[in-house]
Image (cartoon, rainbow, N blue to C red; front, top):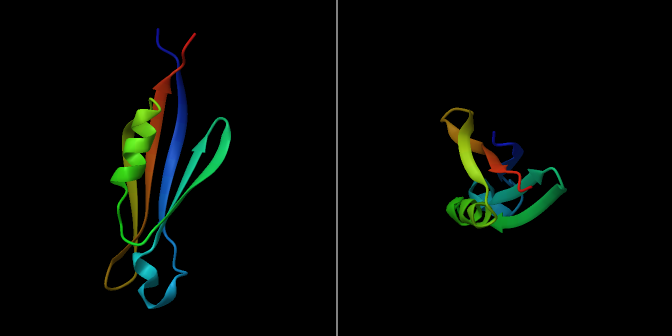
Length: 87
């Protein structure tokens, strides 16, 4: 039987850098070892962070998006990740 450890990657609109504040995105990785800030992107580009997690053995199995306001604006995407525990 496979045992898993779980993590999540939160990718959120930063809302801090000038007039294009809705285009800046922070990536934060939460895992059993703690929290790591993976940086800020000037455009929505989560693929780089998903590839980084994949290189460390994590598999994405769920994604949840948070859309707010009118007109609708993507505010956050959370990826649920898991990887097998090595014994």
